[in-house]
Image (cartoon, rainbow, N blue to C red; front, side):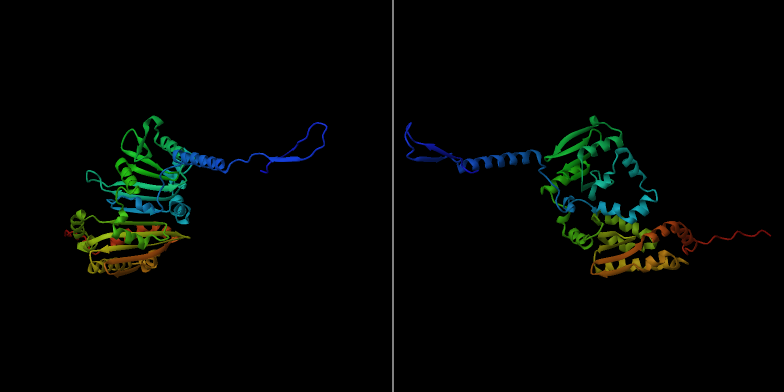
Length: 372
């Protein structure tokens, strides 16, 4: 701001003016402006730490999966829900009635608020059925979600309690072990209390991630780029003896090669009216990988040998499956039109009955003796 100019006349009464004195208002010192700016920054910084979320989700949600997880799958929820395949194969066939009821009750579809979801399985504390938990990113409005859960479950606010896990706000059920932790403005972690805590510790770098395993990272890297759904899983060594015993009993031991698979990764892409995907199986060695591919080709051949199958949509799908063994990895890839899936859903029950009628392993009935 320009200084205000002041003019004063220095003269005695009745005397002519001899000189003029010009003076300026005292300017504000530069140091005063600096102090004011620093004060504003200090207030802004305090407000940031008091009111802005101190934690946020990492770019790669898979990095939050705990190291002891059996496997995990990442779903691009927005792309899946918008795909023609989902609308035709799920919604139009009445398979989304549960979510439609939730939408009617809550006034919105919680899944449509999510952009990305990672679901994973971990060992149960008692060695029983694995525990499942998830991490999600999206346009999350915390109070609306809590209210929706209350409406769907018929509970009230008194049955939910607030607690903090490693500094992250969490909503807990007064009954059971379920937890939902809100990370920043766009993240949520859900599952049993111990799993939620493990995810938070992994996110904060206080516990190892599943991706610290170079094998899992390598497999996931092979299948996840640009895909709508991608997942990876490993076979615990403790389960291998049971799988070998089971494989030896099925189909005369033909499935024995599958019991030697160490890990598997797969993907699925929902394009325009078509599903495409693939899988990579990591075997114990190159010999076992070749055995897995041979097993797959043999099963495809058996299916094609069923009378009439080659003339159906299933025949085209089977012929289009690509298989390859490379080192200790067996890879598979293929695609199928949505219209073909719809036709197969109608045709498969009839094919199953037809296959049973031509199964040579089924003993032929013994003719009843004729009474003269």
